Image (cartoon, rainbow over all chains, first blue to last red; front, side, top):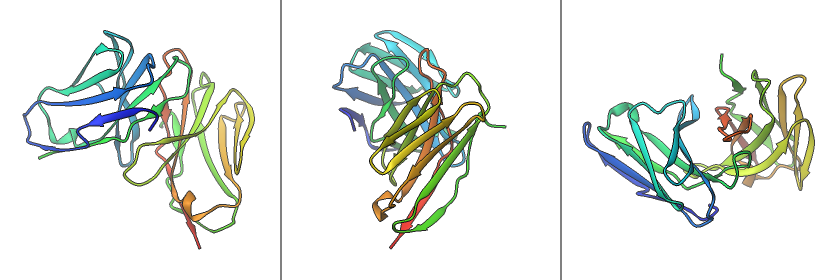
Length: 112
Length: 111
């Protein structure tokens, strides 16, 4: 998985609780992305980062926030989890803005 | 209508067959095209990456891009059971590289 790890790999949480997912890369790539994958929708971009402390929204950013304080780490936070955020979350990295993206192993999140 | 359309399948073929997977798109600004393979409960794995129109070959895999028709294809020759997976097309206009994905085609190669 191209030097990308995600933690936790599985999580079950209750509605209304905060959740933070972590993506860690060892490739020193500038760009990092968070996607969610749902049946019938494919992969959809939540947020992305183009450098330390530089982030921007994707197409499904409502209810999510991100932070990137170091090149290697990109955090995704659900401030108050809802059942609609039950999904598989993937982190991806890219060296340059026009390059191919490499994906991590995913985090399976269930909100009950 | 979605920006990228992909037949979800499932597509079932015998071992050794030539497989053709396709995506159509509506955004004429797309110029970077990718194919990913995703095994069950795993992350997507990059197979092919092409820029603009034309063909690209890598082993048993060939990617074709026809920008005039807004149509991309992935061909798999001599398909193997290990090719059984979901294949995702993805494309980007560049500049931050926000990828737009198809929903994936599930392929099963049977012995």
